[in-house]
Image (cartoon, rainbow over the protein chains, first blue to last red):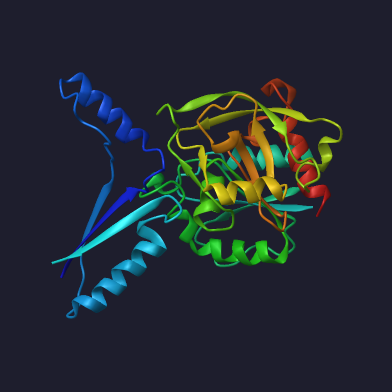
Length: 79
Length: 220
């Protein structure tokens, strides 16, 4: 099973990278771009037969290491 | 008097801390590798130094917070041993949940490296008692992710409980309420972004860091 974890700064937490990218896109001629958020994706293989159990495991990994829930939120996809 | 400096892979202020503590307090300082599962006996002070532990991979301090030695640091913190996290050490203390909040990327996206003036907001802590009537200090900062963040409720609690110890007079990185350093509720764990280890001799421009180390050990 392949796990894909996406981590973003929570809404309301200033994303200065997102802001810089947004300004750069405006400068390149896309003035309609708004609310850019820069996050990261972490992918890995997981030996698990049951998707529900795998999701519980991956969420535990997010809480313990992959995301800092003081400032970040995460999304888990399993395929 | 005995202190330990924890050395993580990527720490680069570990030796500065050792020299700063030795010269400003006369204490014996042991260097402890992050993989250790025991701390030396009889420690009065543990310092988590600045640097780029684990190359800042994933998030600053995230991997270091899970190092084997950190379990022992947590035990020592619960026992009331004085613990100071400087710069990357502050990030590690937040990631290890020994202090609330987190350090975000600086608001102007730049690494800042310069002397900063600080208000000593709480001069009653074991780390600041030695400043006496002095209410301002100068130390240098050197960080790219020193922008302190916590939710409003946490910030209000920190302010209300006297846990804000140092505040920037001219906020260099967008830190919430210009917070430069905080203590835990028990008052024995301090995290700060400015470097006391770079302010312990007049030749360095300030001796205000030496006062911090002396206070921490005087209270042991």
